[in-house]
Amino acid sequence: MLAAEGTGEDAMTHPMNGAAAICGLGITAMGRVYRDAEDLAAEAVYLALEDAGLPKSELDGLLINAGVTNGVSIPLHITLGLRELNVLTFMQGYGSSAGQMIQYAAMAVANGLANYICCVFADDPLKEGVRTGDAYAGGARRNAMSGLYPVYGFMGALPMYALGARRHMDLYGTTQDQLGAVAIGQRRWAAMNPRATKREPLDLAGYHASPWVVEPFHILDCCLVSNGGVAVIVTTPERARDLRQPAVYVRGFAQAHQHDAGLAGTDALVHTPAAKAGPRALAMAGVSRNDVTQCQIYDCYTYTVIATLEDYGFCAKGEGGPFVADGKLAPGGALPTNTGGGELSSFYMWGMTPITEAVIQGRGHGGERQQSNDVILVSGNGGVLNYHSTLVLSPHAA
Image (cartoon, rainbow, N blue to C red; front, side, top):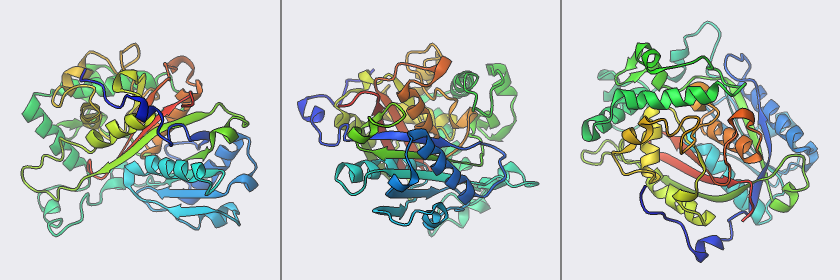
């Protein structure tokens, strides 16, 4: 491993280290749940309130994020019957949004803007009688040259990520088997998760036998498409300790965002903003990479996991393929990662997927898949490796 970062007395005393906690978690049914996004969002909020043991009247903050369908927006507070709120806004940082919402909620409750802030995401891309693949068929980029992408077959984000994976292979020798190791490890975790969509066994032969989508991605390299809603409630540590569930403390966080606009020589599909956000979040938490006991990584594609772990510094750039090849991320491995099955095998709720599992693990409620939870590193990724959020969560207060 590389040398540790984010240690020292100054980091230990950062004012936001442990200044907020997650006290409520609501997860609706996932997958082919044919309900509109606003309905799913509302249910998720009510489930989070019930989970925390909070009456709705105590909720005085609401942060909202919508998926590809944009089916939920700021009037959700009317649907919920929340008449007086101290904090209310709609946020959009794509897959980094969930992590960002928790960061802003943490700062708000720590500074007295609100007492209990609910962060909610919902999406309903799956439609009866419509192909799953059509849900994310829109363009991945919007700039003066974006009209050229469809001409060359670049429809949606998938080909861009595939291009990034191929570039990584060409630069560093990353192999198809190494991508498969990520998918197989997460499927093994999913087998222990009753909520997971895909729980059937998967081996390397089964991975290679799955259909190609865009080389080098098989269908099993790609995240699921899910309808559903997720909500988490953020409050102060003092309030969280009096509620129904064990508190999961927000120990550190950071964001980083990059935009290369397709410029030659930038290699932005290989070098991600995780390299900046990760060390800053760990520094706020007063811990190093060596202290991390598990990772919950945004895994829209198998390649995203490899690139993010590299840029978080668990191995050098280009060594991510060999790093994951020995089952290090799977059950029994040295770095348990995406212990609920992740977006590849559990469900796809953008950045809320890794956060839900981090909260479950942070509470010690993982059952047979429960891992050491002292320091949980959580990533959110949006765009085509453009937008990044990092959280450090723990059952231990600062």
